[in-house]
Image (cartoon, rainbow, N blue to C red; front, side, top):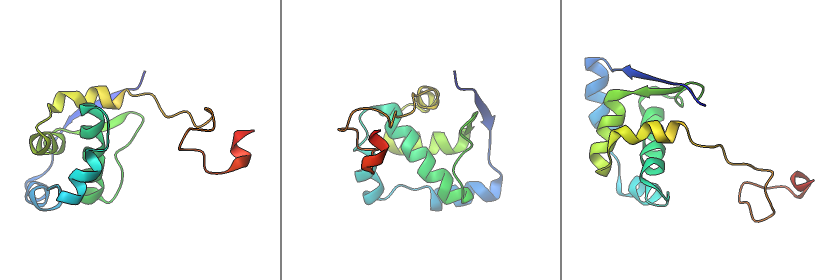
Length: 111
């Protein structure tokens, strides 16, 4: 099971940046809507915002959750920020699956 560290918040300076840098554009929303479930849409958008704010992806093990960021993203998507916990415990895509798996990019990876 994946651990999650929660409860971090951002500074006042970062809060002002949050409203500028983490505001989702129409193009962002189009990408986000391609995700199948609410927790996937929230998690994808959260990671997008995290990269824009901190120039890095959130730590994955344990999954780094910054409450202010996930709340701001959840409000924009009309998705409960509580679903980030479900996203953080998702199963990783298995790239060893059958040929139809889109994560396979090289024929030698099938062996």
